[in-house]
Image (cartoon, rainbow, N blue to C red; front, side, top):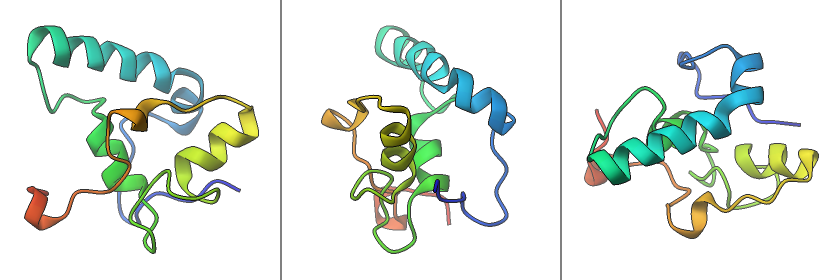
Length: 98
């Protein structure tokens, strides 16, 4: 079972679109960020993590029930985003909006 996003939040695209295309959105955003220095765009990995992090672990990939891991396990897809990026939600100390 995939965990729900943070209550009161709305995703940047409908669930069926995100299920099918999120990897393309993230790759495009990665290219814009790495090559163009453009940060904070619509399909930001940080924004995904902030909404989808588990309330207990504050992570999307710490254990099998967390959002990204549960979906990728179901689809039998290797997840490698967090080899470079943190899987934890931002805190106020890290600069998240209050």
